[in-house]
Amino acid sequence: MSRLALFPDLPRPLLFAHRGVSSIAPENTMAAFKLARNMGMPGIEFDVHLTNDGKLAVIHDHSTARVAGAALEIERSTWKDLSALDIGSWKGSKWKSERIPELRELFEEFGESFYYDVELKSSISADYGLEAAVASCLRDAFSSKGGMTGRILVSSFNPMALARFKYLSPAIPTAIIWSGDEDVPAYLRHGEGRWIGKVDALKPDRKKVGRLSSLRWRKFGRYPILPWTVDDKAEAARLLALGCVGVISNKPHELDVLKK
Image (cartoon, rainbow, N blue to C red; front, side, top):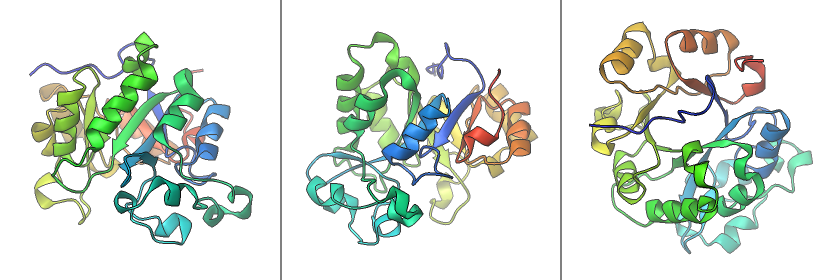
């Protein structure tokens, strides 16, 4: 099976600020993404849900309880209710004005400032419109910027979501995410979703990447490997030495992996 190259025109290693510079600013907020831009980070990773009224909300959890106190389920809530929540104060009073960004808003603000890893947050196999909404948003955001599709990766733990997105947007590379955590189905804890989703790249938990696994995925599978979440300089060096194309980090500014 032929696969799309992952950002072939961009320098290595790739470096993504995980939910923005989330070690400093509240995750998945405009403040965290602006901090990444101010620090010169080349890429950002973030999470996208579809609200009950069809908006694309940039937030990690399926509930707002952890970052807002009030517990609203994203997929069952309206954008009006979600966008009114303070999702910054949990990180400190200086961030109290932060709200959940809309995907469209994020692209309007940052445009070509970054390359992007857009994670689809879907916990079910059924199609409820998330992939189509993201595909449409990407077309609207970048149709006038011809080369921007070469700066977008779409990823997910859910291989069915990736298969649907690939059908809708075959020119955008996709990656399967996995770990050994109990909330990942047992049959997907070793990256098996790559075959279901027909993906172009692999995003394993960093603990899954060793000498043999890296060799198997790169040499025999011919997949680029982009591990998460890498916050230690020595660990970043280990992973890059194993042939990973880049890393995803809460502390990207501390890794010292970008070529001067």
